[in-house]
Image 1: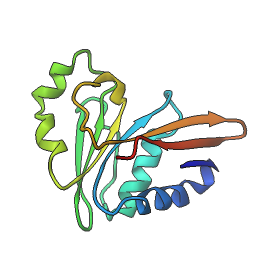
Image 2: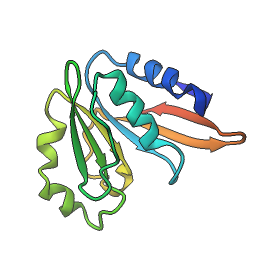
Image 3: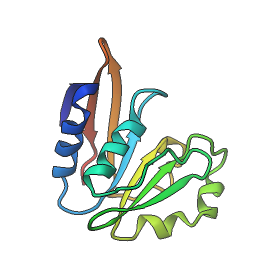
Length: 138
């Protein structure tokens, strides 16, 4: 699936994305700095019933939120130097719960990503528009 959208329609894109899945999934967000990964994840969290403020876990590696029906884990691996840092937070325990896992910068941890994860690639194009491409749906 490929979606081109202006930033003003990010809420609609988040709805379309969530409706693509019948159960919680691990979603991997790829894209350059500033492309809107965190902004999209914030919209997804709102749709899933998170009422508290959501922020990027750049320094803590993971933030946990309670949605209406499921827990949501938001990871940001931008600052990690070695996959051992991710193992130290107990990453396997997060990935194998019945929870949504949103992962920014998954390319930093290629060997620990679950096989059934879905890759979401974001690209910035002209006039504040973005292209979202969903790949690797298992």
